[in-house]
Length: 294
Ligand SMILES: NC(=O)c1ccc[n+]([C@@H]2O[C@H](COP(=O)([O-])OP(=O)(O)OC[C@H]3O[C@@H](n4cnc5c(N)ncnc54)[C@H](OP(=O)(O)O)[C@@H]3O)[C@@H](O)[C@H]2O)c1
Image (tube, rainbow, N blue to C red; front, side):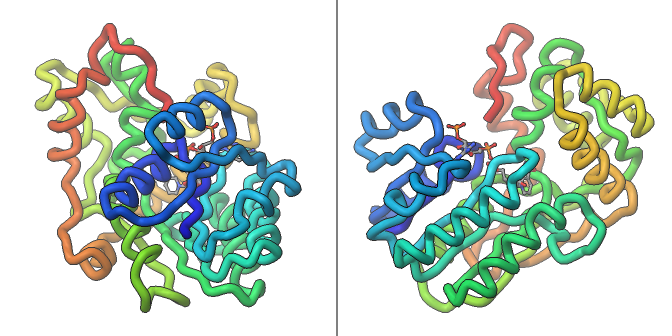
């Protein structure tokens, strides 16, 4: 039995879809009631957990030999995920597949400071592990940038002309599902990228082509971008974490292209143009569309 945490989220919901298609035995953990109820209506075993309440975790993981561990982007994410590692061990989980981040081992990078302590806790737990370290999701064009793309035909960064090898969440999920359902992936860390590295200007141009209207990338100074994030209500420490990601990108470190998706799944990763064409057809970037946060 596989337990998938964050089951309503961008990545884990796709992991669940692919596990369903593979007819694997799994259960999803949900934080909010509504997505859990929707999952149950689809015939999925759904359990409510709160990483802040460790007593909810052990029961949820009981009877699972594999755990897909994904934490939310909150201030104490590291601590929450470490609660889950302890609970997994106590519940008899054998193998943890952890959603991490590209650059997890690069010291002084804000997102490494979130993810690497959890990886270390898993390594020293005695459990088997596999780490997925993906680059930024293509789906961020909906979840993070969708609002201003709809309202202002623009999106904002402080990344300048740096290139990023964005990856489609469906390809990360395919790696996760393979690693969760087949042997020989334990003790390995995968750095997961898309097949090409593009600047945000190039992303804007692909969006413009797919939507048939002009979408702009507006490059801001880090301090102006931070002011915008704070004005949107983002906690300052999270804004600083995101600004450090922009620095990481500006330094060219998010432009790496790896072969790990092909190596694990046997398939080529999707290109941004393909993702954008398919997603544009759903209307999610149309001016009158509702906000989608994941
Ligand atoms: N976005 C990127 O480009 C990117 C790139 C690399 C790595 N990552 C990493 O990927 C992860 C985020 O993935 P995502 O965007 O797919 O996640 P997401 O869509 O933000 O979903 C987060 C999930 O966590 C659940 N959750 C929130 N608070 C919880 C709590 N207290 N206890 C238990 N569950 C809780 C949410 O449940 P509800 O729906 O019920 O609230 C939701 O299912 C982060 O670790 C991030 O660092 C992201």
